[in-house]
Length: 266
Image (cartoon, rainbow, N blue to C red; front, side, top):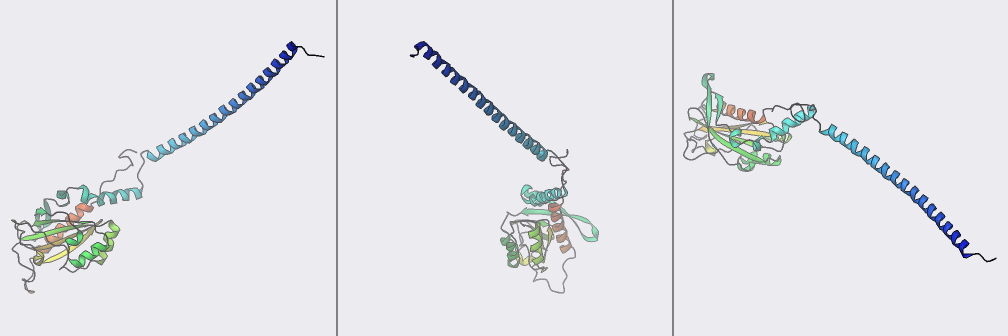
């Protein structure tokens, strides 16, 4: 029997509608899956961000410093002083020392020399040791005693760290004929203070620094000019050591450590 066109058209329309409905249902399912997947990704991301935020807060919030952190703070503060402080902070205008009869006196700074290479400011035997242990720079200044009778040059050798300084000082000799080279300032009472005028030299270690001292007479007399039977002035070398020790103390004096990682409030 021949089918009527109208019946065929209705069947075709019904098939198409069923196909469209099936496609729509499938699209809805895909969309639900996609929305669920996106929701899961966002949830995981939110958890990760939350964990990271909590961790960052815990890491950056102020808390008490540990013992190791306090020690590191002190070391770093002391090690940067030679650069952080002005030259007049490293070498004060006046430095106390104990004179005869235990009288307190003051050495006066005459001048500060430009920063120089370590090897250029010490005797050759000392220069090799400083170079081997990574000496960074040498700072020097010259003082006179309260009576303008004695001249002192103080040299601060800056080592990489305290361990390097300790290793260097273990190799330095106690020979009082070698050490820091003096710095004279023309037109002052120190102008005749040269290498041959050094009567004694010495050093002291402090933090990453080796503080050298050398002393002589302002009148220009050399070490060789003093007969063996003639004693040095009893105040000369004690004053030199006292001045060097005080400058070493200023440089290595432990700083006040904040109790917390962000200051005084934890």
